[in-house]
Image 1 (tube, chains in turn cyan, green):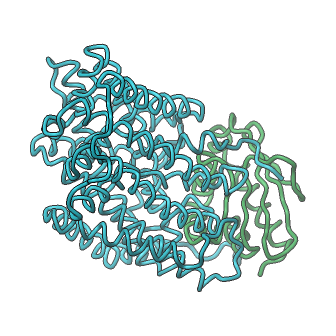
Image 2 (tube, rainbow over the protein chains, first blue to last red):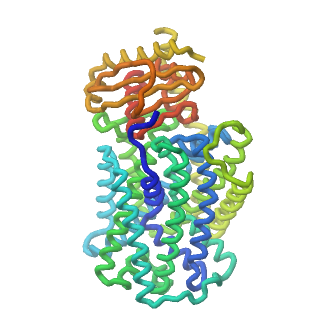
Image 3 (tube, rainbow over the protein chains, first blue to last red):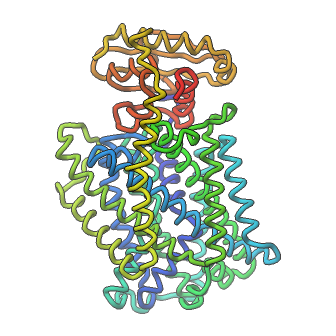
Length: 443
Length: 117
């Protein structure tokens, strides 16, 4: 028995890499380069990629064991308990919405401002988000082959820019193995992880592939391709433009593109950024609105979020709510310019989730030892344990240097914890009172 | 554990409720899909076919379904009798649905329209 419509490995790779590629990753790449000496950013980026391989291996085992679009909500529920799963899932969605959409919109606004300096950047952001919202409400999905074209087009563009820059600058690595202080390198690696944020969001496609293994293969290939692409692009950026100049702008890729190819290069990079941001906004709204819908259906969020459009069968209330939240966050960030805090916050949240995923692998091997696993991480508990230790350490390292991110994270965590312990029982009780007696017995 | 007959009866109830709902039939007139329902703990396979908005039920399976709903017999009977929403068993991993996300949401919507929240 085989499903009629299935996704190919090529599309799984494109989806995993496409969810990761965003305009804000260029800012993170410059941050990575700023923490290390000379042209050694590649060390931190490749290290970040290798660490993400560890997390990807753990995700692969969990995805094979429990192939479901519910993802971490299900993994953590089985590994720990429902309360932990709910709290972490809500926190994750909250931070991702605020962090990724906020940082992304700010960076994209700067990019657009460079192309159309006469128009308020915020106007363009609202317009783009409105467009993505309408597309989502109408249920127009980015088809698999379109996602392929966009993602592979972006990767080819970044590699091409890097190669042209290397050629023009007659580039040679000067001190490739001297990254500087240990603390600088650790921070660089932690931010390097942010470059890969979202690779695991492909796991909900587990129900749309013929073999669950394709998801793990897709994640690994995507991380591999992105590691090399980011490393080359970041080293090229710092080879052509001084790090200080790159760090001083929210759109470093534009400065780099203009330096390499002049105005045509800037236009090309603006298109690349637009494509990257569009797929990020779209993926963010699809994932989070579906999460809100599913949560409302199980009485975790108010029932209003489970309202579907009878015409397009999309959760329109959740989508419009996200539009309002995203525009509000974009407005606040455009006034405060605190986008780097959001980048670091998202990196920390990802690291925490990856550490918990490692812990889940260990817990579920004990709780569900006989359950079939299409993919099992090799070498016993070594990789899950490494995943826990490394990502906990990276999260702590970023939080130690950025107290604002720590403060926001604590507030958001307490909010989610209180919500899960007070509002959720109330919603469930309210629903229980309305629920009819069993039809099965009365029918 | 529910029996094969109980699952069949629950699906019959589901099918009848659906076909009496004119709004649902109009909404799904272009949504032609084949849904296989498979129990994990007993031998029980059914095929629900949505064709031009109307649902029909057959015992057994089909070669290439659009959606495959897999769970234990008790959960399947509970879902199709409307005793529980599909979301809770789905989120706790008891219920697996293989297919495209849009189709899964549509199926959930049909359940919502028939049985309410």
